Image 1 (cartoon, helix red, strand yellow):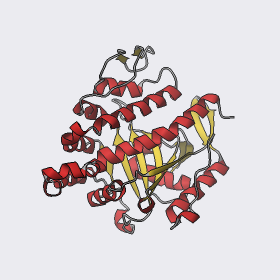
Image 2 (cartoon, helix red, strand yellow):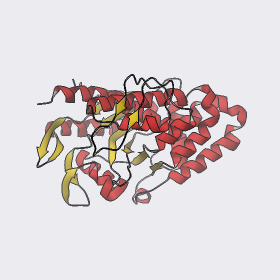
Image 3 (cartoon, rainbow, N blue to C red):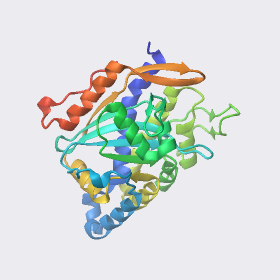
Length: 334
């Protein structure tokens, strides 16, 4: 049975995944194009675009199969595995967020299929069955891609990994964000990192913002809600007109916390194709369904076999269908 807490968590996942993906694409790839008209007076095509491309080139990190795979055209459907990495001192890097997305540029459509980080599955390359987020800790993006492809039975064309520690510097660069903190937030468990955020501040800067999304002593549901609120506040502040001049700085900061096997030309062409249209992309969302289960002293998430098959068919439809009529749409998760 799915608990009431789990149902609430799933409802918030839809908004969280969409906002997170928008933030990654805007701040790390396409923010310059979003404001291209305003930036043109400063010589975007002759100066700024070159600098952005150089920054994105530094983030390029292939995983080994790129030269063997056919090049994906920007106008054609392709899959992008989004990984949110929460790296903490003294701990291995694990993918806190795993989203298999399919982007269909022609129709302005993006499918976001979230994979719970505690999903119990075969870790390809280690010959073990464990939590899916452990793949990144042991084999980085390559092992994660192999593991996700094995689970979903569909190809991962590209990946993009974002280290959330970089968000702290971004928040400082844009002058802080507004957060609805009305009560003291403080870790009291001695085994947790020290954390204290005072309420009612007009603006919260990087360290407090990072602590806000990391705090977890109340519930996972509330932590997910805080992440959604933070990312929404970050987008609102970053996209204010007065911050246009800071876009190169923001991308430079983000670039040092962002790795991908998409080359810079593909990213910039994609940003232009998707975000220079009059309409905003239409997001459709789904989360793999299942139930939590204890194995020994560890909690895992077991994916329902029928739902997994449904998700595999859903992805295949989005990657293969050439028109709207043959496109499957995510079923209601309520």
